[in-house]
Length: 467
Image 1 (tube, rainbow, N blue to C red):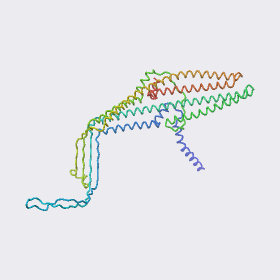
Image 2 (image 1 turned 180 degrees about the horizontal axis):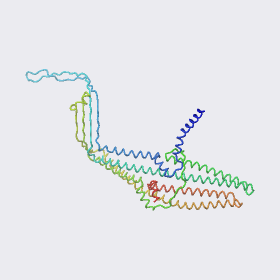
Image 3 (image 1 turned 60 degrees about the vertical axis):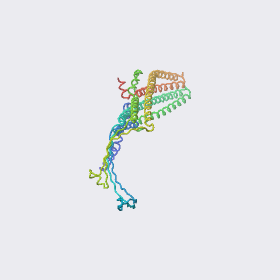
Image 4 (image 1 turned 90 degrees about the horizontal axis):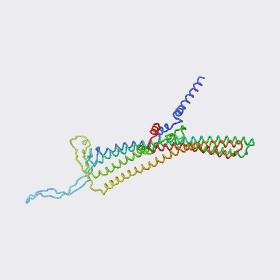
C-alpha cells in the first residue's frame, strides 16, 4: 500500500514537472494587448528592424576604419631561405710574368670553374610609414564616415517609424476585422430570428412556405459571410504576430475601442513639423553633406602627397645571428617621400566631375522628396477630414437603417410587408454597420499614416495629442 501511494506521488510530481514549462509560457504570453504593448514588442523583436540596427552598428566600424589615413602603417617580416648557385665556368686573365723589355705584366687567358654553391639566408625587418600630407583626404574621410554614421542613425529611426506604422496598420485592421465579425454574427442572429418568425407564421397560415425557404437561404448566406470573415480575422492575427516577431499562431486579442481625435493642426504647421522631424529628410541632408566631402576628397588628389618612412632590416645566414648581436648585421633606411601625380589620363578630373554631379543629384532629390512629401501630407490631411465627416454621415445612415429594419419587421408581422422587404432592410442594415466600421478604421489608419509622414513616432504623437 505504501509503495502504491509513493508511485502515485511520483507520477503527480512528474506530470507537474512536465506541465510547468507550458504553464509558465502560457502565463508569459499575454492574450489581450494594447497598441502600445504591440509596438514595444515589435521594436524588440521585429526582424527587419533588428537588421537595420545591425547596419547602423556597422557604420561605427566604418568610422574606425576611416582613421587609417592619419595613423601610421606598421609591418614586420621574418624570412628564411636557401640560395643555390649552379656550377659555372668563365674566362679570366691570369698574370704569368713580367716583360723584361717593357716591364709590363704578362697575362695568360685561362678557364676558371666554380662548383655548385649553397648558402642560407635569414632576415627580419620592421617598416613604419606615416602620411604627413595628402591634400586633406584623410581628414575628409573621417568627416565623411562620421556623417554617414549619423545618416545611418536617421535611417534606423525611419525604419523604426515604419515598423510602428505597420503595427498600427495591423492592429487597427485586426480591430476592423473583429468588429466586422461581430456584425456578421449579429446578421446571423437576425436571419435565424426571421427564419423562426417565418416558420411560425407559415404554421399559422399567415404566409407562404416560400418565405420559409427564402429565410433559410438568407441564413445560409449570412453564415457563409461569417465564415469568410472569420478566415480574414485569423489572417489579421497572423500578420500582427509576425510584425511582433512572434509565432503566427500565438493567441492574441486587441482592445476594440480607440479614440479618434477630431482636430488637427493647420497644414503649414504640419509641413514645418515634417521638415523638422522626418528622419529620411535629415538623412538626405546628411547625404548632401557627405557628397560635398566626396568632392573635397576627389580634389585632394591634385595636391602632393608627403610621407615619412623608416625601414629596419636584419640579415645573416644563421637565424640565431638575426636575433642576436644587434649592433651587427642590420640596415636602417629612413627618409621623406614627396609624390605628385602630373597626369593619369584624366582619371582625377573625371572623378572630380562625377563627385560634383552626384552632389547636384542629391540636392535635386532632396527638393523632389520635399515636394512629394508635402503633396502626400496634404492628401492624407484632406482625406482624414473628409473621413471624419463620413463617420457622422454613416452614423446617421446606421440609425436610419435600424429604423427601416424595424418598420419592415413590423409590416411583415402584421402581413402588410413581404419577406423580400425584410431581407432588403436587413442587408441595408448590415451594409451600414460594415461601412461605419470601415470608415472608423480608415480614419484611424489615416491618422497613423499622417504621423508617419510627419516623421513622428507613436510616443511623440501620443504626447502631442495629450497636450
